[in-house]
Length: 301
Image (tube, rainbow, N blue to C red; front, side):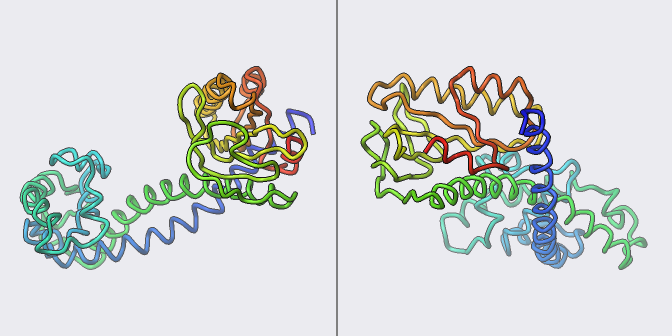
């Protein structure tokens, strides 16, 4: 393939992966959020009585309450409003009474209730303005609106985490296909002898000028060199420059350490890259392997 063909193929590959995966993730998230919404609806008497007691009854409702305000607020920003780095420890599971976490929640639950009552989206929950509008259809519409907001955000987050893991898994699968095996090594790679030829390890810290993580590391059977792999999937072209810089910075860092034996650096990429992006990688002595053609990884192995 020409570079232009690879660029086009990579974009099509990434968009197809995104569309096929997020649809299912969104559906799953929608169901999960509907369950919490129904719980919130019950404990707050259809959002007319958002109280400290309701939040202490089941702290999971905080998630629905975050998405009931306009604009919605992330876990971290919401937590910071009440003196915590994030609110996730309360909303991801019911906070049990007589625990340290419950005592922490007791301190802020009243303020959370006050905040939500002040900020709740009354254009969505219109029966809070006019009780005669509290019909089944209106309530169901508000539920779908709120759960959709939450599910969309959850699906995007789930996709980012899944996409990275699936890309790394594809790299491992290709290495195993050509005969590489998982290394027993654990810890930080200090020199190339830490991994035997024909073996790999993943999510491993590597000591260059500083200590940074490689997505996959393996020792080439053909050259004996340490090979460090960065997996980069880019769904938005504007993000590509940042990902390229991350790869280049790591390559310069790792190549500065003599004990690593001038490691080979590979960027396995997919998505919305440009000719300039590829040129920048190559100018940093980084080998480019397209995810849609992972068999090329064997050329460095």
